[in-house]
Image (cartoon, rainbow, N blue to C red):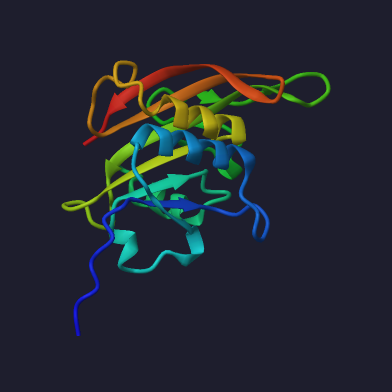
Length: 187
């Protein structure tokens, strides 16, 4: 019996806000990253990742509130990262400075400014052989903006492994004017 060939395409992992439903911002982030990577990916829901797959190259879409695998990876990178999400993803906080970046809303409750994180690091489940990319936001606009910022090498300091705080303006229900507010090298 011949061995099954290994599928080397990165694994793009989504969380589900509601059974069977991907968040709009997560979907936009996935489309953006797919275009940047220029290669096919394998798509899977966070709860369906196998023990073998967790040790591969991973692209995690969405924050820990919606994507349980993002939460697991962030917990394992806790001593490595200085940026993270406050409880329930309500803001991005900086452990070094104490700064918290919280989304802002207009009088009608529509988002006007959102924040996200872009992280590229060694996969903590297989640090010698695989990497993980996380694009996640306080809201869907922050997630989509984080994905858009992923290919901004100059703004991200040209680092191989990094963490970055991204800010975006929301206009007519879309993210605009994405800005990398801070990018840091991580080990």
